[in-house]
Image (tube, protein in one colour):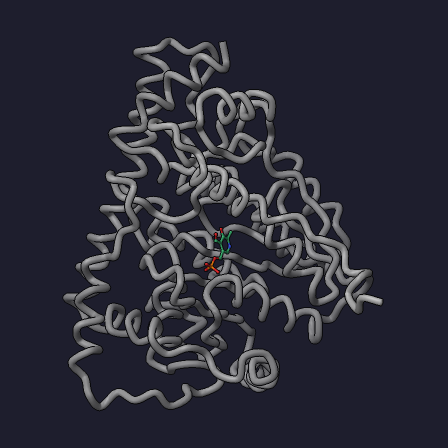
Length: 405
Ligand code: PLP
């Protein structure tokens, strides 16, 4: 008999399926709004000019070899990455309370953070993580893989197409003391809905009061507002407040290094000694999982972060990407409200932030967009702003208008 006969056929990844359907479509005006990577106004992937410069420098440095990196990664990379996300003036850094480990992009940081918690967090009851409803679909799988059960906390309110702040807060208050909450640092995926600074402050208070742990996932620093410091605000605020926390950092979007898998996990402890113990265990876990993280992307990011001229250029490149997305939001809003007079309120298009926007349309309407208008998006009505550009935005706005009337 067949050895694998009891292996069930897994469903294809929904985004992968969407992309395949889009590629197979021969309609000239087809639009892909499922894409989770930046596209320029010609719908092309964009290699950041600063990345090209850093690659030239690497190419012209013959002394570089292909030896293994240390288990916890390139030290110049992890140090600069911690400064970037926690702020170079961070007290946690100057007090050497931060353990930073290079990871396989943001996904690897989430995994290593989850694995570490699974082993070492002082769980009082069930191993559970509170995830926003909805969240990046991979979060569920990542935590389940290490024996942590995902539970939902209210986040998105379909009635306001905004944040269900009361629901979120009551969940923080009613969860058992010492629960672990995953928080999107900025540009929440998939909704594009972020708490305000005032709301973050209330969230931090509730977390401190209950002794909860904050598991920050930050995949979009700089990519959201165009400003690296602004997008790290919540993280730095929580560190200042003394919340027990870790941060998952990705350079996929903000440096356009998707396939190079550059990321880091930062665990903030309350003492230098604790940080050292944490480091020793993270090294053990990393060793058995990947042995040593990859060099190439880390070298690129290290050059950019440690050279003031390259760093300035990177900030301009980030503004180019974030600026185009923000501009698409404004244009879409204008088309719907001023030109087409589409029924309903569309403020959320400009209020939401980052690559993704929850349009608020129903799964049926989303299906019609795909089947009748060749516009590909997930059933939950999420659109990637990166799929919109000068040539697709008019067609998308008109189609959306027709579908909601
Ligand atoms: N976390 C969130 C919320 C994301 O949206 C993503 C990417 O889409 C990631 C983490 C990790 O991406 P990567 O592993 O490519 O850095």
